[in-house]
Image (cartoon, rainbow, N blue to C red; front, top):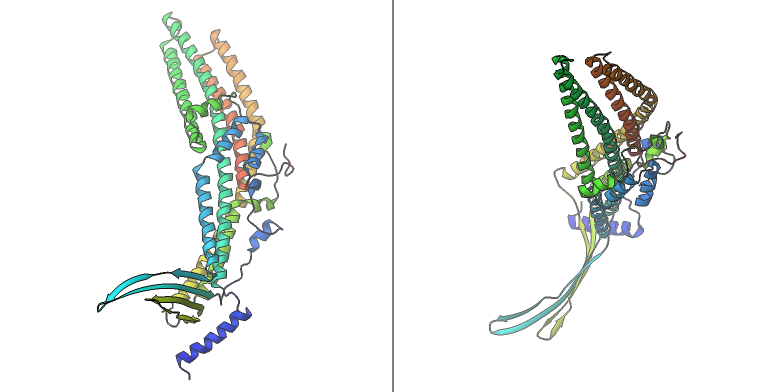
Amino acid sequence: MFSLPSFARHSTLILLHCALLSACTAVGPSYQVPATVQLLTSSQWQAVQPHGGDTGELLTWWKRLQDTSLNELLQLAEANNPSLQKAAANIASARARVTSARASGQSTLTGSTPASRSNTLGTAQTITTGELDASWEIDLFGSMRRSAESADALLQARQADWHDARVSLAAEVATDYVTYRACQLTLQTVQSNALSIQATARITQRSLQAGMTSRADADLADASAASASATAISQKTECDITIKALVALTGLAEPALRQLLDTQPPKLPPSASLTVHTLPVDLLSQRPDLVSAERALASASAKIGVAEADRYPRLSLTGSLSRTRTDGVDTTPWSFGPSLSLPLLNGGAKRAAVDSAQAAYDLELATYRQAVRTAVQEVEKNLLQQDSAERRTADVRRSAVGYRSFATSVEANWRAGGDSLLNLEVARRNAIAAEQTLIAVQRDQLLYGIALYKAVGGGWPVSIGDAK
């Protein structure tokens, strides 16, 4: 049985020998990419950059919609949006943590030069000192290496978050733009219908005064005109709300935004440019949110090693050198030697820290796996919805043409006295509903394409899928 000092001396020699021979390795698990990633892509998983991380490339992708107003809105949003600025700030913070983690494995040197003047028992003395203190913690069990691994992975996660913010922002701007254009087309339809109904109400009112129309028909015409006017007001409000959303996304003043939107007539971009029927599953490997989740998982894995290494001894080499001058007399004391820290009793706190780090890893793993499943579901759902909207478009268009033709015929008969006002109102309602449905299905086909753009992490090459 030997004493603690003897044990400390022997441990110091063993640990120094281990450090010099680099025989000690980092404790904790060595990170392995989850099998889920390997199902998505055969290439090495890495923090990819949608559109190469370049604004110009992102805008080039959206040019397939052949809409100059949309391209300008996307450029404005990229240049001045708080969500991107926040993501960039998070990258800067993560980069600073990487520098801090790597610096912890380097030796430190501090210097000081205190000076004092004292008077003791009538004797005055001037004391000046120059001091240098150095220390270096030897990374015996990989705590600092694991910390650097964790910080590096988190930096990559924050960079992926920035790319995710760019993709999400572009999709949101495009969604609001398409919604606004569809709203304008619907507003034109309801306003035209309101004007027509108001004209019918005026004719009916004159007919009533001439004693040729019943009070009931006049009341019906007036009620229909009021309802159509209220619908037009409500639709105009919906369009104005979408304008507010675009102002918030782009940072452009509303008058300037309206002027930009008015540079071209209200119309929806061609939906065929965003129509695909199949996409390879490995496109999901470019989704920035999945990259971020996987990098967060790698960071959590490294933190297990940090917590595990904290259960083992820590060895530091420290030294100091000073020069002191007291009334012209110099002294130069110095010291150098190892310092061993042994975690003897901690009430199980360090073991609990390892368990906590393991639980955090398990949580990140479950979060990542769920994110992958959600990504696959989003792609498949949007492909189905886009295909459904495309197949419904022809039928809805034929329905709108038929109802409009029928309403025109009924109105002609009504003016000739061969049909009732009630039948005319029913025909008009069917026609306006069919036209609004056509606008909605054309809008939805575009919106599903935009959602697919986001679901695959920033679009797809033109050659992929069977685009029309």
